[in-house]
Image 1 (cartoon, rainbow, N blue to C red):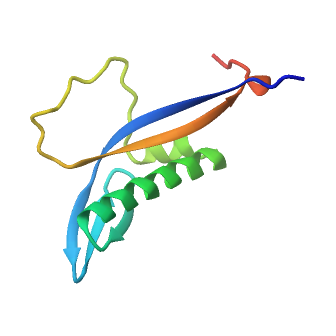
Image 2: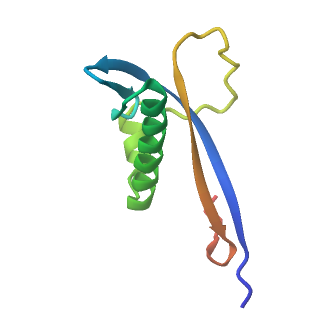
Length: 109
């Protein structure tokens, strides 16, 4: 049996806040209420991206992602959002890698 596998990646952009406390930078993703930290702002940013990625993947694996997103106030839109290049808030880009196993795919739509 020849298994067909493909990879897919989703990219999400989320707002992030940084605050310096002592010798550390605390990073916070308010929509998901996920925190991390680092000895520099760059490390705190890398760590919050990883923490959010693990949080989302964990929710997906537990079957709670839809519930968590709804509880956090996420609402799906049917059309693209225009670029917000004028927006000054800080954001992180989180990549969510997946493997698609064609042997187990069934369309539910």
